[in-house]
Length: 270
Image 1: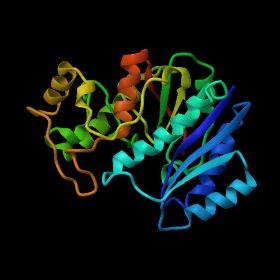
Image 2: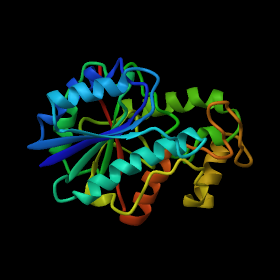
Image 3: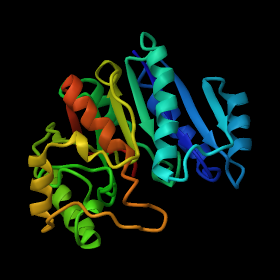
Image 4: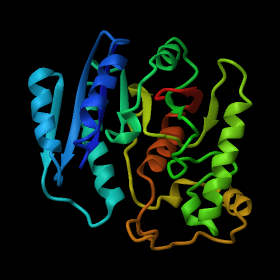
């Protein structure tokens, strides 16, 4: 039972060694592992840290990209994650599991591998993310009924960020022991996947409302007291052209292979 840990890296120099330490702890749950990183041109010592760690641990492979392919941040991140996916699919017999993760401050806390160990002993998920302390934070990647799409693409998004955050915490806190929360999309900095359920999907940082039925979009609009999708310019994110890349990835897997996207109430990083 092997696993590939992967993801994009840019300006993560201060966090990488602790993240790698956490990966090594999680990797102890598998027979073997690899780390695949897509490096984007950084302004800090990220590349130097990668090179030094690779000498210590040759299980790390990384690709160096110095030229962004798009002016849009989410498009570039999606491209990086898809690069990792391509490697995993090419080596599918080697990696029945993969963990897509961020390599920044989110995952450089102390890791508690017991929630991951328990998850590997169950068969009630295909994609699984975890809760975080002091609260679940990644509301942008989250699609949880009735908030089925992106909260940023409906009215009053800043207020609803807090409302949805309270909503998911209430749902997670109400679960029975061993129970998971079903959703449309979630990430929260790290998710583990059964590779065979994600062979016909890809990350897409565009606004992919076409992947969602009118009923789901109308349900979210009603919940967020909005009539239609809205497209705001947030400065670093252009709402007309960008959405969280995880949403399309998860929704395609749900539609094409019936993937069960779940959230564990357990905290992986304290």
